[in-house]
Length: 145
Image 1 (cartoon, rainbow, N blue to C red):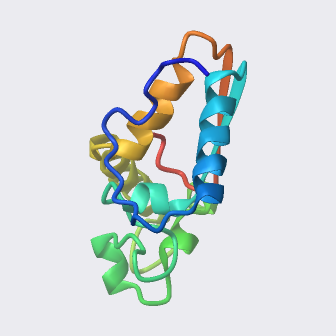
Image 2: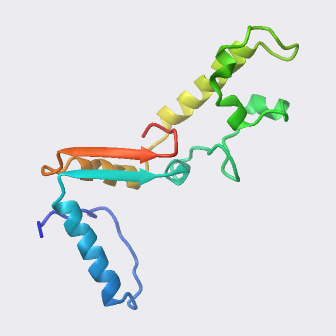
Image 3: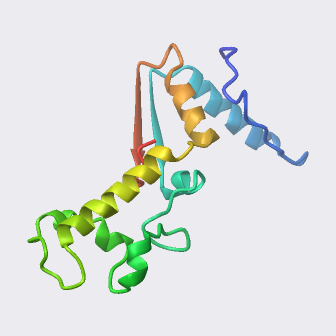
């Protein structure tokens, strides 16, 4: 196995009861990373939540202040590009195109100003290992990191 330390910044408190089988699995995973030509990272909304970003649903749902005035809409409804196809001014409550653009600007600013946590930095570092020719990220999240 190569001598690269993949978890340089990661400190994991593993109980002394960690069994030999688990340690063997961790060693095998590290060996695979250290000897691969391509790597695929998979993640979900939890990656963004740990960086302070909201999700589409649930307790960590992103709250855009104008949505508080429109209980009939939620984050998922606002994430639909239909807002840009609607005729502007088709509501007595708001101009839909401007409403849509304001929502997307809010999201863009949140995502581009978030500070990626250590998990993102590890994924980036692993993808930049000299032997890795291709790296891919498959995510169900939309945070852009």
